[in-house]
Length: 207
Image 1 (cartoon, rainbow, N blue to C red):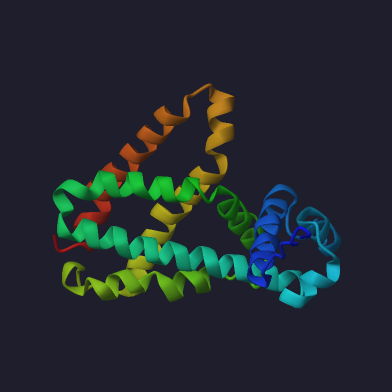
Image 2 (image 1 turned 30 degrees about the horizontal axis):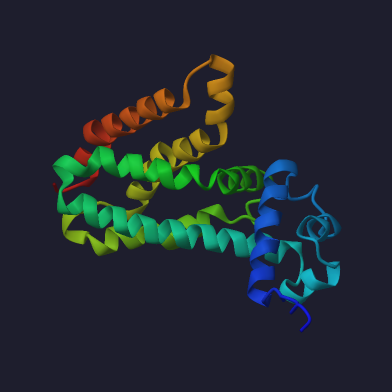
């Protein structure tokens, strides 16, 4: 009996297109990556990409939606654990957040690079605006009565951007300054914890 040929399911092919596109966009940039190159990297015909995606923009939008949806679900879990024990879980929450981000460094790089070039194509503010309030809505009784814009301003510029910058530059920073990655991570988590406890928490939280 002849050997059966295995066929990749369409969902697997779509996943591989997104994975290879993520690598290429992070390494070369969105504008410098062509559909031909993505198809070659995946090992498929260019027409197969157009079966799954209208164009390159749709590939980028799909990977960003996935990233922000995963991040939202992660934040919900972390928030539940933190608000259940805010005095003891804060540093661990930041450790878990670092671990989550370090597995998604390429997406952090793509988001920062492409947001700077084109905030319409990479609507980082819209994604942030749509998802960030979910946590405050779930834990209203723990949040002070201040405007959403005040919370967003502090969270975006004092937490989110430093965190994303760390993910993008930490490897090169460690190489340049000859710092061990685990030592740098520990210090960065310490800085985040200190800022949160001394500045952010007193202004925002009712705990």
